[in-house]
Length: 306
Image 1 (cartoon, one colour):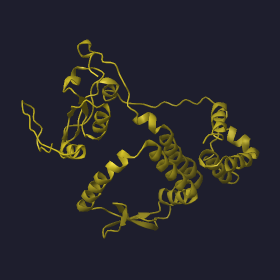
Image 2: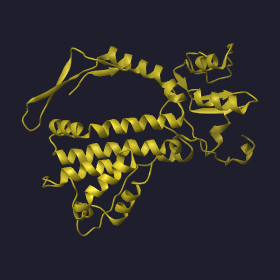
Image 3: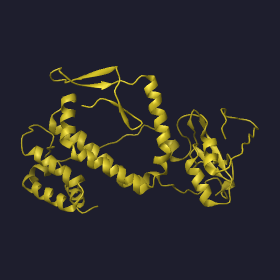
Image 4: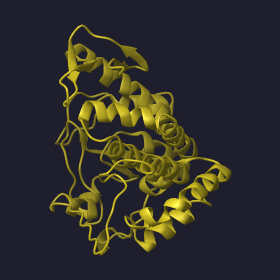
């Protein structure tokens, strides 16, 4: 177990540590470095410095990062599952099938749906009156105040605008659609209007809210409704016969089945996936006990995807 901190892409060991113990034997299994306030502040500043590079990275490159992370976990899946079992006290099969597989599925999901999650969504104005609508300051003026600062480049303008602890609204004034889009992506504010200002508060579909110390949460639009409800996930399973791979007993062939399943679902290269799928055929009855026909069809379809 490597319990060092990771700050600014380097591992740090601190003098203050937390001893992790096995819940089964209470024997120490490792130490975790604890971060004091200075280290926390340093980590936050490092993340702020790194964010622009991640923000400006093309979506295709971001997806590659997710896929590399997934393959790194897949290569060390046994090691990760054993560590989880030792520290948590759960059976190895449960750690492999729940935590490891669950993490792989989550990373894979975001790698494949990242463009949908972050793609801008166009919406027609609901308010008829607005149907035609297409600085370094340490305070948030709420009156008729117009501070003016000069700049030489767009990068300098963005730096001046973002050098503030507040972020409610911002306005961009330009005749260039390309410049407007570039600035809107980089200005840190809850709302950015182009060639206009503040009208969006009266538009029901326009998400309203700030970032940084301006406030938390959103109103207006579907995101505003989400803050007024408790989101709930409901799963229903009416199968007459049930049996999950991580259920007791944990003897063979279950460990081999789960390892081959990880390869089928997440390994790159159709040849390796088909080889693992063939190895699963003798255990198909056991697999079928824990999956619906629809799930099996969905898994079979993943053999052919890139």
